[in-house]
Length: 254
Image (cartoon, rainbow, N blue to C red; front, top):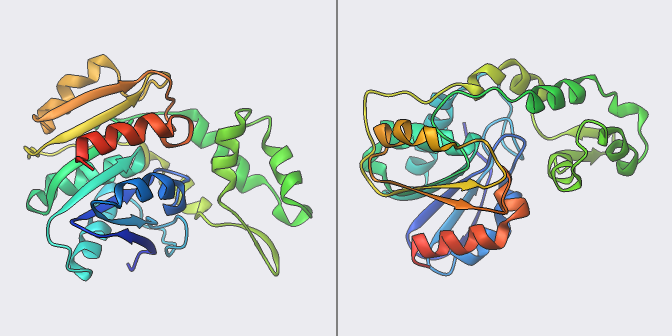
């Protein structure tokens, strides 16, 4: 599958993988500040952004999409930044193709399995919502207030709303993501380990990476470091952008 992407900067290649409901645009500000030292590729993963839709969706498939992209663009060895679902895709790729990855940053996700009813609820609501009855974006946003009371998170989700000549549509493949939500919640498991430098960044207001998760992280990524951004939620690139950017630039030496 040919993935849509944006590219900026110059230097060694660095790839950013967004999370569920995300797209490359979500990381443009952070990417622009890393691009002074790296050539940054911001990918739209399958069923997201401008990339093709597919009923097939798993972390192994996302890892293969990433490997195909690296080969297609002849990138050689890369650095990876992955948030949430994108973090698990990055982990899966690094475990299967360790020779391809020099360094990795995982943002607010552990390799364990999860169940977060928020995503289920939002996808169900998106499926049930008849976009044809709405004339304005503001009216659709108002319909989401009860399900997503946090304005910043609501804006993040609604970046997926696109207006066409026929009316409003979702950029993401809502049906496929809902059908494969169990895969998205699943753990990353492997008989292999990724021995190279890996930074895990968690939000202090998030429960995605707990202290008790560290042994499982180090079992797969023995060189892992873990830092906490106290003010950050799961969406660190939304509500703790400056702090996240500072840690990324320090770790990546840019």
